[in-house]
Amino acid sequence: MTESKFYFSGEKDVVLIGVKLPEDDITSINYSLEELALLAKTLGLSVKESFLQNKDKIESNYFIGKGKLEEIKDFIKNNDINAVIFDRDLSGIQERNIENLLEKPVFSRTEIILDIFNKRAVTNEAKLQVKLASLEYMFPRLRNRWEHFSRVEGGIGLRGGEGEKQLELDKRMVKEEIIKIKKKLLNVDKQAQNRRKRRQNENLVSIVGYTNAGKSSLMNLLSKSSLFVEDMLFATLDSTVRKVYINDNLSILLSDTVGFISNLPHSLVVSFKSTLDDVLDSKLLLHLIDASSPNMQSNIESVEKVLEEISARHIPALKVYNKIDLLENFNNAFKSYSDGVCISVKNKFGIVELKNKISDFFNN
Image (cartoon, rainbow, N blue to C red; front, side, top):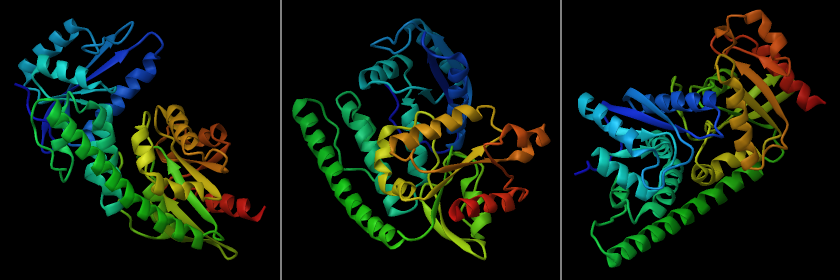
């Protein structure tokens, strides 16, 4: 019998599973697995092993080869593993089949991100956005994934049971809950629109970037505020707007946004529409980049992809290379990153130049 699904809490040992298809780049696949390990760590999970299988195509019933799953099953039994995390989304049938074979709960990358968002949500708006994204992700998997819905924070009153009658009842209840949440978020969006109308003539600047690039830290430094900051993925979800003094002739409204990540679930992008709308109203974007990341270019592309998805690529963007103090060739960084400005929020380096760049933008 498979364990019940759960929102992760406490120390649990997990294994990660990735698959490389012929069209995939091995470097990107390895990075994605490394990032999945960081996501797991953010939830307090301990990754004991990562498995990667080369496949010509995805297996319809088990996603990866059954022989590979048997190998993983032996590892699970010998190492007292609590759960399995796939680096890609699985169908409900695939998850059910794999769970039956491994006798352990199976999660996808999207579910892990949703779980992190669930734990990070503080405001009522963020909680509604995460719940909506969770329900919309789970809904098409309802037939084969009954237990998923008990994991949604706060619950939605679903009862277990077999048969088409119970399934249809549960589907109707989920649809009604989705409609209800969307109505609440619509009201939230209207309130946000009114706030944005009042700021139309202001110089709104939004900080965007890959998760853990240092957005909230930069916000704290520029606005002299004290937003929550921690060295982890998705430390903050809610957008925050602060007035920032640039010089005697210019003050701006600075907005901190939710961090982006590769393969960010579309449902989350859509659910966080009202949060991301600050980006669309901005006159300038500060694209904050972790210059110390070995996957910096991939992270930049992921951010630009999300900006494209929310129709924000037309907004002028200034690349801001953060954590420059962590680079070995510190002095060469200025030549390498001449398309932007180099800073270290930690050491308060390059902040004057950043302010000058912002001032030049609004004065030209």
